[in-house]
Length: 252
Image (cartoon, rainbow, N blue to C red; front, side, top):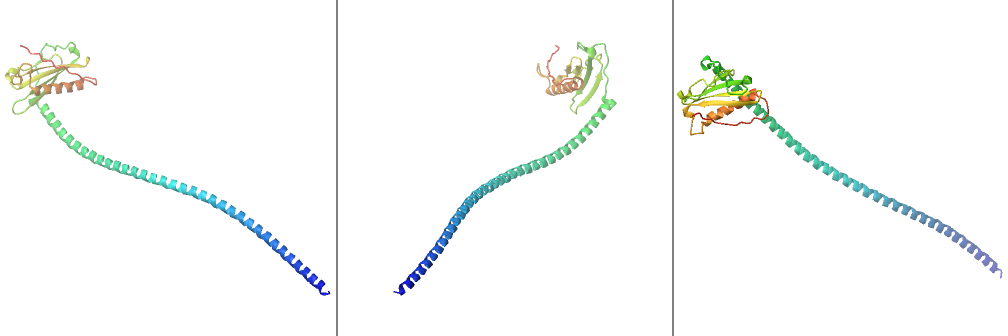
């Protein structure tokens, strides 16, 4: 009977130890549960951070892609502009070479022109090639002859070459000074340039060898007269537009 209290005390001690162990385990379980909850919270936060980072990464990827596309467009545009600029430079270099060539040709032609001018001046200044027409009281048929500038030119075309005699007279000079019936291949013409009315009248006579069928005259004579009359009008008259009316009147 004496052994029962000891066993009861031992059982009580064992029960108390078991309760202590259970309490300790409960506390540890609670701490572990709290740690798990905290870990889950951290995991959720990490997942949110990872999701946000993935979004930022996608944005950065899109931005990088856009920048690459923009850089590619700029490179293509720059290449096109560079090619165009190179082409313009080549064109300018070609134009510069052509310009230099034209300058060289112009200088050569100016030298030749100066030589021709010198030869013409020497020819016209030679007294043997100059001739004065006789004066008379006859006046040109121009209605305003007092204001007209009388210019007379004589051209002769023999088979050996042409001779050009140039004369300038007042309106009182005779229209023609030679009898071209005696010279088969000559013609003489007179231009009246009226500066007041800004018009000109041209009269001419031709030798028998320059006259063709009725209504026809040698084309070289007509071309010479038109060229001369145009030059006289451009020199002595004003205006930007000139018109010409060619009338041929034959005296029977």
